[in-house]
Length: 124
Image 1 (cartoon, rainbow, N blue to C red):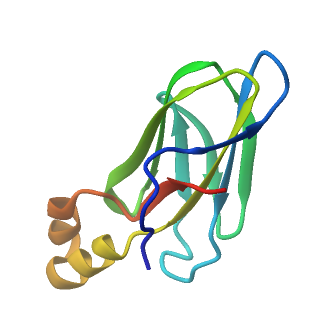
Image 2 (cartoon, rainbow, N blue to C red):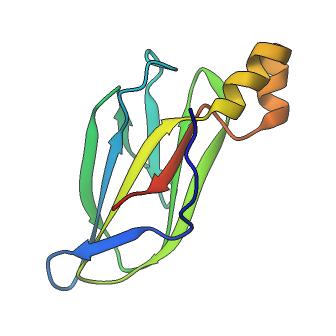
């Protein structure tokens, strides 16, 4: 249902002088019809459906990646400092906490929980 663990993104070799990010959405059935809107440093870069991926360049330095969806209040994000020459791999999947909150309290429960329908975590 949710993700456990990692606090820093996994980094791998990327083209010299820039960093890249690779984000993949899981194929979980929870929130299957809801697109995962991906923002990097406040700019929307993708809307990922189930099993879809986004790959793109990011400027070296502070990075904030946020995931949300129109159908549920709140969002989840990850922050890190991008290093030139690295690729940061992330996975987006449903948050079980949000589902439980919305089942108990509806839209108000999801809003109070506040973390959004999806979460983004680093992967190897």
